[in-house]
Length: 554
Image (spheres, rainbow, N blue to C red):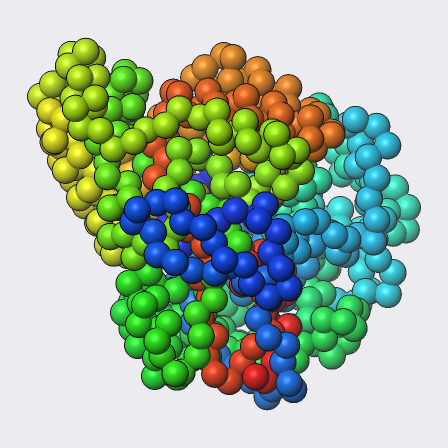
């Protein structure tokens, strides 16, 4: 539930590469019904406004088109682990719980849930829900769907959400009980996304390994049904008139997702009115589109932070002073302007403020205010390099031709390293190999640093912090701090959100001091709506909420 962004998403432990053009800002700003001005402390920042919801539609549509920056890897929820997969799937398949645009949790296919013991979660399913083939939703469907994440033959990308699960059992006609080996506050929150998707058990058995592919599609309960998937071109969804939630009956009879890999082509398609909308607008096109008469750019809440992952602690970056020095040698204000056209905020944390929803104000203040600052200071950085005794040693920085920000960030990091006495080499790898770095240690061999735009799939800072515990799959540099491990492990077992957040704040301070990842900046979710359509909330929740159902005629 964290990830980088790009095409194939890394494997819950693996897919999230690029989350490309933009990401998150503070959700604690309490978005108003329309929009709120965003304050920009960074010198490299551009002015923008966070919008809670776009204007209400005036009517329904026959169809609209939507630009996606890459073709989905799969519509099988067990492998839907990146932006393209989930933004399509969210409109067809539904989870036990919903992730709202303000990043709060609400009932979904489960009309209620309980936590009767520290290691037990009980879900009561909503009656009267039908799959797209007309069959009713039952507890047996939920058990079969959830158990796939535990099946090694499936190899779910979301296994980590289930890593503490001991059993998933039907405990009533419409009730499912999940038992965990230890108290796990993260499990229930994760059911707002792909880990909580419920599919027909009969469909899973019938389609087998072909489930979710371009020929079979999926059979779920969402406001749209799977229509056609033309490989390399598009996916078309059709409105499901038998949808259970009458407040979310789709306003369009059809939506067509068009795959557009080239960022410049996407921007040109928006400007020409060739497609009606799109998430994750390429940053180099934002200013052009803000002045276009063909539609409007909106900025919304996100949960991602751009960072440099330290993937090799056996080299010069194994010394914390070198990691601190390199962070201070990167002109992050200038980098924000170059990579994201200034749309964002420089940060010293690896979590976005938007994921601290359950925390007390004092906790959030401590979580970010108590952090060590890393201002641009070449003199101080050079001194740290000299003290560490690594002057002249080499670091290798990976990049890939996925979008413009990748190369900008790699070049800036290499220049920063050279400016303080390190040697730097940029290694360009293919997008496919880039994705593999998140799942295969061999693909990271010889690489000291690589960029990620890591988003969270739940609104809890522990999701990002927990992956840095010793031995975790996504702890790519094998960083280890026993005190940090203990704080995070204990915090996962705390049920009270405020108390849990206070422990997360302690953990974040340690990460900030040790810098296993070098934080760069946050940026907002960026949405383009053409002049034909409106009605969607520009929030990162588009990955797991049926957002396309709310879009209608402007």
